[in-house]
Length: 181
Length: 156
Image 1: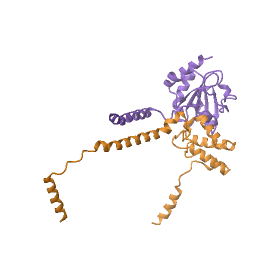
Image 2 (image 1 turned 180 degrees about the vertical axis):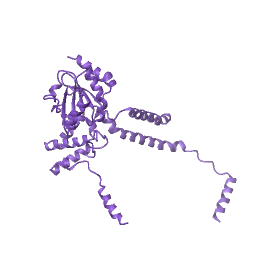
Image 3 (image 1 turned 120 degrees about the vertical axis):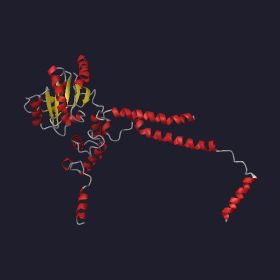
Image 4 (image 1 turned 30 degrees about the vertical axis):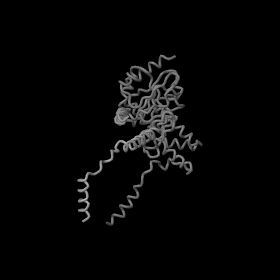
């Protein structure tokens, strides 16, 4: 009995230390999304100027094919970092990417895509207060959602997509979902 | 020295800045009050340890506006809270709900306290028994004589 009392503090300390050590390696931005396995929120977003009539993004556009929905903005610095990867995905034809231009000046958003390249099939504008982004549970830009053929959100990635994240994490999920009827 | 009153006045201006902008506020004071109270319990997803009521982040502003829209649309406080939790999960609540998944969170401190209390009680209950030494042997004649001299000396 006495021996237990001596060992107990060490055990408690070790367990706590292991928890905290694990906590140090976690990213506090990775908040589990509650939208996984839920249908894409109802939306009907206007197109960016100069991208043509009917190039906006609506809920029905996300049915039929597995696609990536990317939250971006011309003001968003990490989006610049992610941009070459999105262009490469488009070049290889891995999967269709749709954009939501979040809290942005539409003219600035269009100009940015014109200048640095446009990886998107459809782009919808979500002006402040960003109702659609809130419906998606967006906490910042960039954020990307994998939407399956039925228009159901299946995966959420927070932060810029690197070529490695794309090939090792996102693309395998997309390929898997594409196999489903 | 003449500057002191001015400085004190300036200090008065340094009251805690409110993140809620006047243009966001609802006209009905009762509804605005509800929105403020709700906002205090909702986490700003950008700053994470501030409420949306405190935070200057754009997303917090958006959520303040949306909370006010819901209130204007006639939602009850619980409906507004559910609206936000449906999108951001329980994480958005600064006060996590009491349910199976959060039992350890709510009861953990209580359990630790109970454990500590038990340990302290056990420690004190055991100590007298362990430390009670046998009564000291009576003084010898020599010791009594020395004690008497010492006592007499201290009386003087």
